Length: 92
Length: 397
Image 1 (cartoon, rainbow over the protein chains, first blue to last red):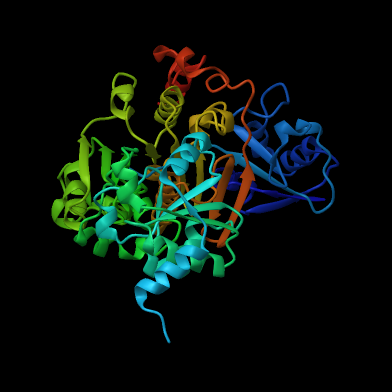
Image 2 (image 1 turned 180 degrees about the horizontal axis):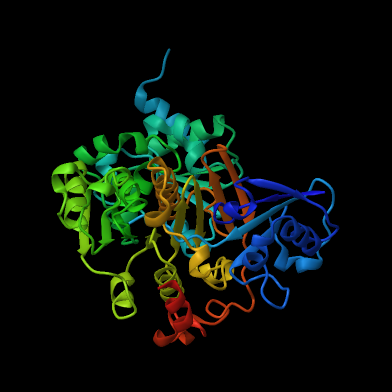
């Protein structure tokens, strides 16, 4: 079981919470488990081919999973995944 | 019988190591700025204002004990002290030996002999009495001091927007004495801005934001030269506007401009202190071209419109741009004075509701379409562009 931190723009898709616990032994499994629980997150995280969208970064314990093994990166119990879409707000 | 002052100086001069200006000049040239030699000027500020040896650190003899560790932290470093003629520096050398400095010399004949021999001198820019008072709390900080304050006064910082993030950043950078503040904004002050854009005032509703910001800054600190750009940053004007600035503060509210700015700033190798805010959350990072990742390394593509809400549409806690704008201002000051660890290669995430700050690591992308190439190869028509840029803009409306 890993903890996934949900960014503000995805919170409406997960019932408004900031963190969701999800099962899985790899980053991909955990995120797919999140998408199973909350189907609205599926298209926001994953492209049609099943890979992560290029505008979404995922960090495992502060490291970008793209510099680890991507969706295949192993995830242990107690690990924290951060989903981070780009934000542009400067509030002009 | 106690010795006279002159006798005491004679005694001490016979006890401390002395070095001829010619040898110091040679050492200085051979050192090549690699920092093995520390030259310390122990004269008073008024004397130093008329000229000093290039690269010398100024520690007046009266403050030697309290300030030398800030100037020369390593007690094993080779230190050459000088004053006007060699007396005060001999006394200072004795003090440094008592403080445990291992390799201290006093320069014979002092600055007077150095100058008579025709060796290189420089006249430092000096702070006026009013500036010394205005920035006195900076002067007391070892990482800033007169040298750091002068760097701030010489610095040129460009703010993209005098809005939520730009307002607090501009106010504090102006107060800190950043000598030139450029402001790009084509908007006018609106009543709904005043919940967070603290550089503007109620009686300036309808006034161009660049003019309103200039008015506040000038009233706060007349040392600051405000350069106004009442325009929207776009591909046709970006190179002309940003060139020559030392640091750029990015708080723009849309992705196309963020990517355009990234590409142009990589090309011109100008660091960008970037922040974004939404609701109760903020992101902050420093993109220092070729030293760390760029914005495209962090986010290869902008998100589609439904995942990129704006503050205008979704709202923001009015205090939040204050928090994030001041973190930006702090990073700007650090870059200018060269202190601390700037937020390069790290993204700071601030959650105001949870009162939590986290950082994640950001790596340079070896396949980055922009910063994996030398700056001169980044063509102007590529800047801010995406292979699917038109589709993105259409989707974003």
